Length: 127
Image (cartoon, rainbow, N blue to C red; front, side, top):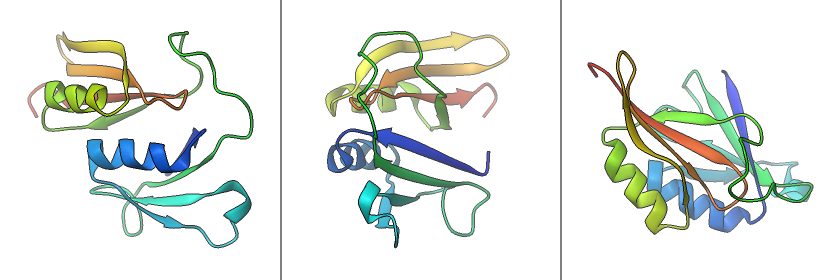
């Protein structure tokens, strides 16, 4: 996955949510002003990494919270799934799947980001 995009209703709220979870920073993309498009920089994301990301204002309405997966999900490696999950809930996220262990995979969880997206966290087994 060389590039991912996050569609949001409120860019500033979503930026704050993902900054708390992953320490991301953002740069407005020249030419993307009409969409409020921002490029994402993080530990393993952005210029000089194998993965780039963008966030921009959703062009339509959000899927209803609590409904089935509404598109692709992004799952990110984290040091502590439980701590990241708690941070997400404390910063506007909603439960999608609480921290769970799966043999041969590791510990993972999913939350809704308050913008109609589901994001996951994983600590791979043995990592």
